[in-house]
Image (cartoon, rainbow, N blue to C red; front, side, top):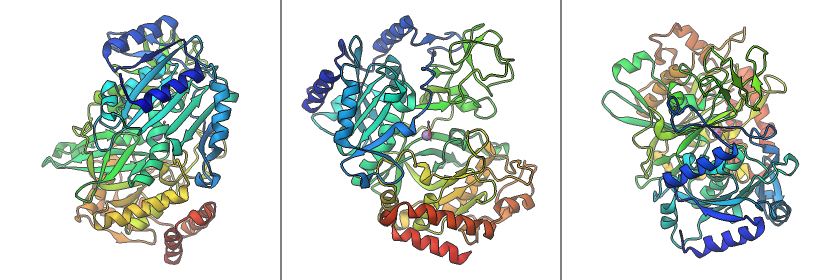
Length: 585
Ligand code: OXD
Ligand code: MN
């Protein structure tokens, strides 16, 4: 499929290492995909679902010890430890290659090695980057066909260039003790072994589009961020775009596919999804920030997805989708998960492949069970989704899950203050996860597990971008949908009603909405948040916007402790911002 000598030499070297019985190049055609599906069905790797109700849909189960990303087995491998910073696991590159080479040695004997040429971003777009993933898993091939743009045209665009990310993946023995997800940003390389779970093995996603790309972005002057991108269209047909970063379990996919409340829908407002997880962001010719979603599909968490919480995500999964670790409903050969509806199937198999009795109190689907769905299935997918020049950003939004501290929304005073706001992002742990409840976890820009270099330098890169943008920089905001009352109930309704907050944000960007200055930034006046159709009055909005100075003084102490970890890599500007916050408090 290519004469690119760097590609061919690298594949030859990897082939000699993993020693597959044969090699198959993935060309992106439907014929080849069908052949692979048939093979994977024959071995039981995937099961075809009811093709009338769920055309083109399949079910897969991972090994039960292999159901999530493994952060403690994820490494950034560089020559110098200092380059990865305190928030990443580090291995010295040559040591990592040596350790993993032993595991990879002969790992594909008796197996086929698939060569997947893929593009992150629309093929040929100035934002796009090529990758090649070598894998011994058909499941990986079928998922990559949904999540990325795969085929010969990627190699055609690559030409003779050496600028592609080299991904090597082998399920090997799925041995937990020898599971490694290693990134070599200095070599454009990713090696992943002994896992078959999406986030560890679909190398285009977290590994390339965030960890490697964040490093490339720093060196090349652009940004790879853990952000959704959505557009809000007004009744005149003008669309404004927002990129937003949230840690996991804060409703990112739901916000990306938001359904406008009736108040706005009736007036003709619409919301369009450009992406639900990752944004690649560059300064355009006009000096503004432009973003593309480098992915082609959604790798979403199934449990909790239903017609109410996210009808657009659910609709996206009705065809051409791979379900992983959900319940198999044997009566009609469909799928189910907790929170889909109130009718768990009676005749069913759980995510482990065992007969499941829905009345025995056990979970049928794994809490991290997933759907891999083509983005073009989404009823609200943006017409700009495949546009290689991206969409211009009016606003950047950060958010977390805070019971008391963060108000519903506030605006940073300027870009530099906005970088500070992103750097102090945090969420409180919920009862849903193991460990203590209410513990603050700092997750700057939601990039803690995904930044491929020293996070102090990453903050520095954000500040640099701001200098280049000058007055063309988008405005930066922070939101918190999760304030609770004294009984621990959420005060804000969330979901579609979050649009009411986004509308104030866009109003600020257009210079139309009012604000008041507080110690932490600009806030709406309570009456600036539209409440028509809500059973919430402006007093409640005032409560949601209240800034408690005592809590914030504690917060500032926590931030200072957190910043200390980054040593002299932490930009002085952020300490100045912290001093400023403390003095205003
Ligand atoms: C994801 C994550 O899977 O952020 O998107 O963990
Ligand atoms: Mn994510």
